[in-house]
Length: 361
Image (cartoon, rainbow, N blue to C red; front, side, top):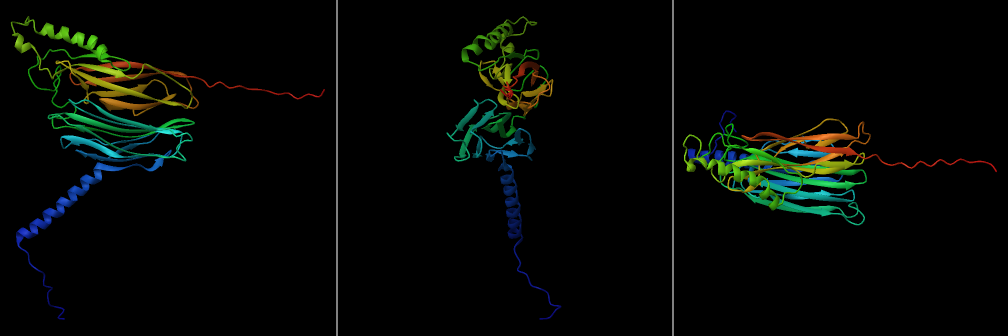
């Protein structure tokens, strides 16, 4: 073979070459999307706890992981379709039992929750938990945000430990608080700039009657005042807000106190509900939640979120103080902030000390 001869390569029409390039780029994009939408957390089980997850209907960013008595992974991103689907498998192989809670919420939709638990007679070591799940929620058109949470909690002799995968997703409507002016809330329809958006704090489960008799009673008074037309001759039609407008927020902790033994932990749920001018209640996915402790004898994980926050409160094994206060601060677009306080206490363990003395008769 002549070393100076050139290697002949087949020639392709330009459009064929372009198709090959586009297909290659397309496969790379699909691969990157698939890599971001699912995974296993943590890589090695934490106290026997591990979550395999897959998220569809959203484009997710890089995960942010935190370790502690609760191992958490946060995956924020953007909605990409009309349905959010969270599926996978949870595994628990040690301790007395485990509980999994999968929660989904979206702006303008009723929250969806799936819960199951396994507590075998002799614990999970001889009979481990391997529970598949598939939970979905329809995303309303124009939804500003959505969120999801997979919470796996194990029960052990020393208390509880958890693994959590969660995320906040911005929607086509502009994301968390996007475009909301001071004194107004995002939405459609006319709204007077000085229309009040107020806060209520309700502890524990919210019953329909309680809500109607409390928060909505004040709402009715506000709306009747707006319809009076006493602001410089403005017409009644211009005064009434769109029925989908958020006019009130409710901060809703699951309890106002927790008493724990040293080293023990307990779940705490914090939710923020939005009440519309039409009297509808929905999870406020764009409302911020921040938790803070005054002392260091307790730990709260996670300590911030949006719309709904499921956390674990743990007492120190050797506490320096036995009482504390958990401060909950919630913020909503156009509504400022509101604060609630949860009393925390550590109950000392009782010890029985018996001293025996020997003596010769």
